[in-house]
Image (cartoon, rainbow, N blue to C red; front, side, top):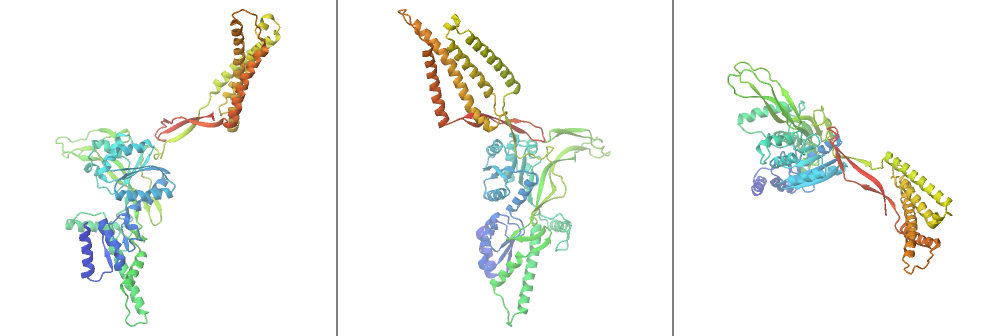
Length: 593
């Protein structure tokens, strides 16, 4: 992946080697991007089988670049289809702060916005992801799309375990190109293997499909399974390791062969119909012809249907779920010829699974129950050519009864006055008004009685009437919006304020006026006879009411009372595994200006 060495090798091949029509290869993004950018000037077409960086998808910058392997961005439309299938419309992203992952995240953001899927939170981290994972939890993110390498994946799931972000309420979607048993090799956290595996249970990984699973013979005359057997046989004979890109390299050779064959056929046909005896085609014409033929590529290879769209391979994306599997492992124990019953808690599922192993053969080491965790290929694939999600059978296993919910479902609940309580208070209020009416009748009936007359019956009547108005406001304040419409409630806001204010001022003003008269009489130290008539007391009460009316009228004109909604804090209520938890947010209609 040395840029200098790569460029030198390229220029040496161009200057000193035979004439080239195409370049096959390009693995390292830095070297590949530099060479691919200069291809147009050399009238060359490059075909890569391993360069997955999204940068090379820019056709304005790399017009002559093709690849048989899907780019890293190719998984994003598949992820969107997968989210739509399970009706997940609210997600969060957790991205390692590296250019490769940031580019994929940016493209995913665009795809999610096109599909009207809400991105509730976007978090990026460099080394310690725990703060970012907690932010996702605080924002109630349930469906988390991660973009990070396997070295940091163990830290992410360790944080998820400590924050209880696993189980039936959460779904993690991460890259699928990690090495086998990566959690053992990359675990640098303080979490035990059991904690990690518990948090990882049920996560879904997404990656391109290295070989087609369909048993159909392609252009090579072999099925993908037959090709894989031959590849492994040749590989083991030569003692080399396997590569996940071998199928794309194999199909790439077929692309080149078909392209050059088609180019030669076109050139022969042009020569046959040319009016010139010595027909020749310059490098620019041949390069353009190769480019046109490459864009028309369409055949069935070992990696699926080989087809390009703007130079990008339209491949198949697979979804893989991490599940717990049980198997019997060998353990050397001499002298024991029978297996014993064992039971243990199944990680992440919250229940015990018991199993009795079959008797072992005499002389054969007994079997011990062990837990094997592995990636299981689910029959869910995304066909990029048809833009459809193919579900062969429903084998995705969620830890709850249903797939996780993408949010805490908030149920709005009106806070309202209890009807029995309102009824009891209304009855008491009516009794109070009846009692006040009786006092009023008694006071009017006996107003000429000496004792009643001395107590200022007119003031007594005002006190009683003010009390009855205050009583009446209780009925209006009890109508909290559940009994009347919003418009009627807004009218009540003004009416009940006026009634209570006038009633209180009338009752208090009359009582204050009577008290003031007693004070004025007994304050007279000379003991002179002083008469303060009721008309003067009525003026005092009227003055108080006039002040109230001025304030109420100005209030009504400048900033009248309106109906507003007051919301209270969310109350989380456990609704069982089916709902994955829900919340109740209580509210009530109030009057505010």
